[in-house]
Image (cartoon, rainbow, N blue to C red; front, side):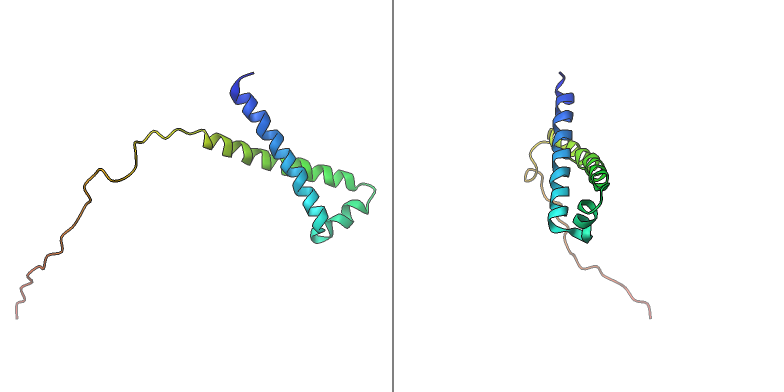
Length: 99
């Protein structure tokens, strides 16, 4: 399996795992009465499933984007110190006034 596909699958799995943990924390903290709404209804599992899927898509996308951005190579050389600083001198300027 190509490395990029493996990277994608692993990060999508991490994203959906984070989504399950996130929903668990929402239910544990009972944010906005969500625990009562999900556990008190006979169709609450549909809402929980939808939250896991929707948050999983977002978390998986973010997780994969972070992983791809961390793969970037530093193409620039070492930063700082080798170039002479751009120093401007402050010199008084004569202003002639005509009265």
